[in-house]
Amino acid sequence: MDLSKEIADVQAAAQADQTGNGQLHVDLLDAIRRLSLAAETPGETLMRMRFEAIASYDLFFPIGAKLVEYMHETGIHQFPEKPEDKSPFVYAHNMSMWEYFQKNQDQRKYFDDYMAVRRLGLSTWHENFPFARELGPGAKRGPDAVLLVDVGGNWGHEVASFHEAHPNIPGRLILQDLPSMIETVRSRPPKDIELMSYDFFTEQPVKGARAYYFRNICHDWSDKHCETFLTMTAQAMEKGYSRLLIDDYVLPDVGAPIRGSAMDFLMMMFCSGIERTKRQWGSLLDRCGLEIVQIWGGRSDYEQVIEAQLKC
Image 1: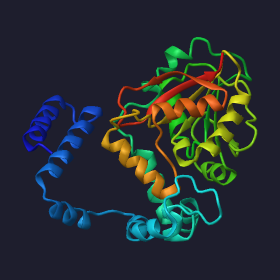
Image 2 (image 1 turned 135 degrees about the vertical axis):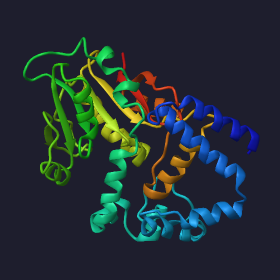
Image 3 (image 1 turned 30 degrees about the vertical axis):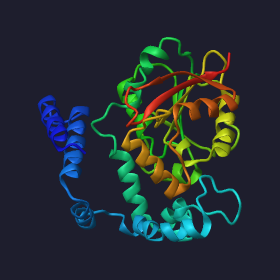
Image 4 (image 1 turned 180 degrees about the horizontal axis):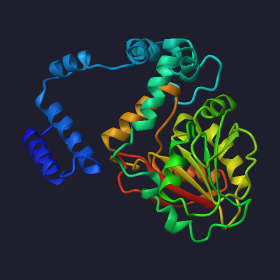
């Protein structure tokens, strides 16, 4: 890295960051991290990382420790399908990441807390995708009309954030997740949000909603699995009215940024997942009977919102 360039980037980011929060502050922190990497020797970087406080040593370190052994013994399986195929996580822990969280609730709490706050200060998905402008005016009215279904939405932070920003757009708001998660959410449910137990590998019971929203779901799953649950969603959509909104990384086909590339590697290690390129997204959705309307959010080093509809 060019040290003088990184110093100039930090200075420019510091001048732009007048409030100490939001995207400009995140950009400043990123610039500082790049400067640190540029100034450090490889040995200094290693020593710093060894002593940084990371809550999930027990979760991550065994994977790295066995990664070379894993590659020699099994090869790399982007999408394990045969019983003998394993992801790096399963090879290290003898269980999937989700099974690990079931047995280690402290780690599950770290994960849930991280997912709840990881995008604080950044633009929300309904700002990146101007929902109120694009889908609000044509939304159906009436007691049965569904505005938004948050599929696999965990605690419902995203649908709750949407409702807080746009309380006057008509229509029901529904949070869907597995029964065990929905029962957990009932202990402190989001206001004015309907809770619904649902496995997205089964038929989508909510038909003709204005929008079906998936946040950080598809990157956990192979193309084959994604085709299954996205097709289930497509079959519930109303042609010319419903939209599928996928909130995930959309990497450029060439020249992907380091953050997105690193996430792609991490997803492969943890759950045999993938951060897809624009071309890969287009091909996947096409096989599900869908087409991309537009990709919203200009930065490929953060999540963007894919707006898709049934093929014309």
